[in-house]
Image (cartoon, rainbow, N blue to C red; front, side, top):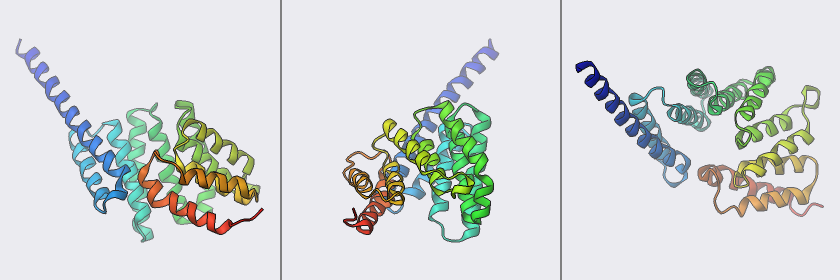
Amino acid sequence: MIGVLTAFLLLLVSRASAGTADSLFNRAAYLFFNRHLGPGYLDSAYALVAKGRQLEPGHERGLYLWSRVHVQKGDNTKAQAEKIRLYERARSIAETLKVVNPSNPDGWMWWAVAQGRIGQTRGVMNSLFMVPSLRTSFLRVLELDSTYPTAYDALGVLYYELPGIAGGNLAKSEEYLLRGLKHDPNYTLLRLDLAKVYIRQKKWQQARDQLNLLLATENPTYPADFVLDDRPEACRLLEQIGERR
């Protein structure tokens, strides 16, 4: 009888802890995805995720957010050594998520994002060396969730950035980006990257159309990315291409 009671109490404590962790991760996600609203939002999100992980270290959403926060901190850091350290930490966290649940697409996605950032930071040759594993990971994400827009964007960018002799293909890039937009037309990074494809193809009007649609987005999927990165870059590109025909 005591054993049954003990097990029941442990279950209640576990559920209470999970609920608390969920609340912390929800607050952290809000701060992270709205970090444009305040200079301390990213650090506060970091602190909340760290606290939540103390309660539930294997929580899948916690691991996903923990990896994303480290990637963002790496993006915001100028020193190369610190960038790589943060990206490597993000990759390790995503690897843990892959172990916890191999069917969770977030683990595959953010492992590949962090891995790609490491390659970019270390140089072109490192990036090229990583291409096969990155492509495999992005495709695995889509096998697990065919609506995952970040994977479509990643594949689009991959085919855009690769030189032709290494597999670069603007038609494939456009195809993946358009497919991503079908699943999430409010994911503004997809429009930005699609506009870059059109600019390289000298399809000026199509590029302007995508950039203007980006700027007109009222409910961006990731508000902070829209305000801090995508909108300013769209304005810059519109000014750059001007009235070219």
